[in-house]
Image (cartoon, each protein chain N blue to C red):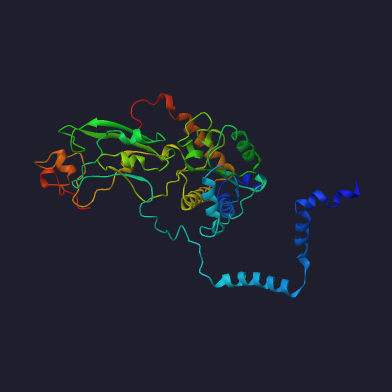
Length: 184
Length: 210
């Protein structure tokens, strides 16, 4: 991205990381991506009683260029999937995704040919939020958990190290097809 | 361009467009009535400062949910600590989203987890599939499965949201004993379901005083 990616690791980078994390998490602008009934709860979370403005994210941007967070609220049909991916690609990095509700997270009770079985087939998801639909408090809880993750995000050489570690862990993990016996 | 394009045709008048255009015009009307109307609008804004704030300060203040809110599930216990779940899989059959996976196991005299012959050996609920409809609760014949009011479930991976039996089991209350342990002396499973077991007996093992 910018200068912060080129800084050497150490005292300077950790302070920059903290500052950047604080700023990123305190003004997270969501893109409107309401697809079904979850969107109603998402709107309620933005309204007066729950008031997302308290976390600096009251502006639901219709333009993906101005948004940092995509709240996928509702079931994604196969026809909607390319649209969703395009919106995600149009968002400027750094960007995050919340899969809101059972349908967006895994397909929920719509296990059929028309519905994408979880938006993580299309875009990388940071927080999964169960519920059908989740109440506004649940959405805010997910958002706050995401804020925590964003605040601890690494930059520069630290970020590269984390990515390498995650990659190594993913390669070492046993594929689901090889897991036998009880899943516990 | 035809200068008549911007004029209202008789056909437009039929739809009342001329009337609408006439009504929307006096925005800049400076008459006394218009000024009073504006003042009325600002008065609403002004008076709202003194109204009670509607916002719930969520992470700090958590308003209790409705009493019968459908939240996370719980696997209940008998008063002596034995599990109520008998591994019958009726909840899994009732589930419209196929979110529940149950494997039953046989109780043995050495390892008695629930009164009677069978217990739930594996019990998993996939919260990413669950739609919190409560049909599993209705299906449960032993009232082993109920729902709590807990709703803060969001997590960052799919596997973390598959809850195992350990995550769902109710905590041990006072007078309960961690299974496996033998049934209450002189009791059958019927005694358990009638609610005639008061609590763990010393002969079943040392009770916890949690």
